[in-house]
Amino acid sequence: MWMSPEEEKQFTARFEAVYRYASAIDSTLDRPPSWTDFSLALAWQEMQELFPRLPRFRVRTDIPGETDERPPRTGVYVPQDDPYGALQFAWAGSTTVGELNECSTLGPFGVKAVQQLGRHRLWVDRQAMLEFVLLKDNQEALKADPFMKLSPSDATTAACDVARHAFIDRPCKWFFVEMIPGEFDDEEEA
Image (cartoon, rainbow, N blue to C red):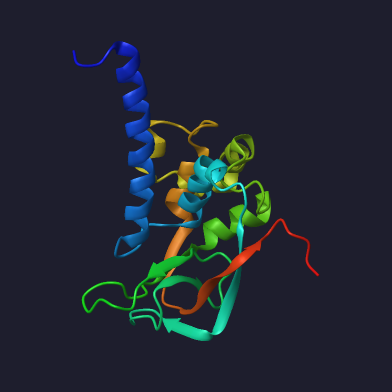
């Protein structure tokens, strides 16, 4: 009883926020990486208020990387030829970890979802995700999912149900992504 109930409630809320943020950092450093388009979209929904201004970035085509190789520079890499591939963090200094792993990208079912829903509704529009899951063709694709047998989709679980079947991993070539110091996306371009 070293805290009042209100202090304990505040402490628990702060601890959970720090834990979620630290877990996102862990996911960035995991090998193989655990980020997918789905998990990145959810993380952005949860943490976007922490970033009122987004820095500008540029893709450095002169700094390429390749799956299963140590990158030339430590930082974030984007797949060279895959608009649905998840970004990946890799580091150059280690001899045991930090290589670029396979690209997590949308497979056929995931591509079908983005084509039918559009990029802006994929993962975040709960009702649209549920309607996608309930389409007869998609029900056929999802019927073997043991989670679906235990608990049919609803608006809160549909995105997860799609995500479990949406991704594949594949080798690819990568480009380094560099933050442009002092420039932000909300500034007018000259």
